Length: 340
Ligand SMILES: [Mg+2]
Image (cartoon, rainbow, N blue to C red):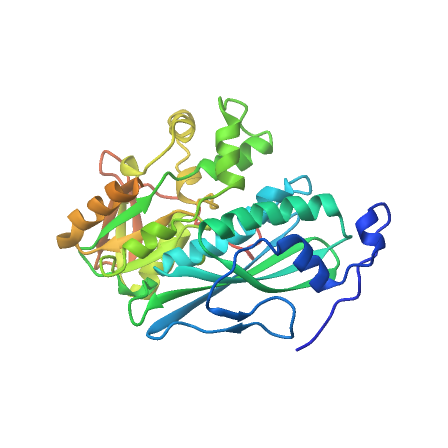
């Protein structure tokens, strides 16, 4: 579908005076985005032409970030470029897929060379790290929003899915939870006691997708999901798809020092369970494969923490150290909820 956006007019920027069209924009700012042998034709024609490997299933995902909803107007364009791709790679990681291709749709209020350079740098550095090639794009003028679609490969039949958890499986999460959520609260002036806001801000703005862990869990995890909306919400999706329930021990949740102190002071477990933007993985693993998970964590230098157990009884129960169930926890970020 050949739909070329009209050149986007700008005022101050000398590069916009040249009237860059969409392909020129994409080529100028994203041409350093890697070259893969399976891309027969990349940016510059009506479609990209791709050759998927034989015996691979394709994992395809898309995500949109909107100014004022997912990031603030003052967001660093480099971190935005990174995050727009990272959230998609996190979805691929949750399926155990190896990232390959990305498509980018940018809606920009104006062409701003400084912004585009920063954005493309953040995007391209992460793309290069995971061997991702940008194969096409679209640009439109309007309120700032960024959509990235990513495709990855997984050996046929080996994708991790949400529906495979079984009673008795152990639940693991990667990394630490609640850092990004606490960064958001800090930036809104709600928690002035943070000692190292820059560490939390890094976690919010530069999430690192758990690609190697996801790929390494093929054949071991029975189910997986990435944590975009918080553990309660995202694990809830796994439990619903698998027709099971689970028990999570909050004392086992992996917390960084800032979040740990915040929870100790406030008793607010919601920051670790429901604040969202963690981009860690939550996986279910049959108990007899426990040592494989722990070996993988050691091999990849990634902290994988057992946080609970899949149970036959439906529902998600969060249990305190004294064994009592914690009630009244928020359910997580919901895009269309009135309090979302
Ligand atoms: Mg996801």
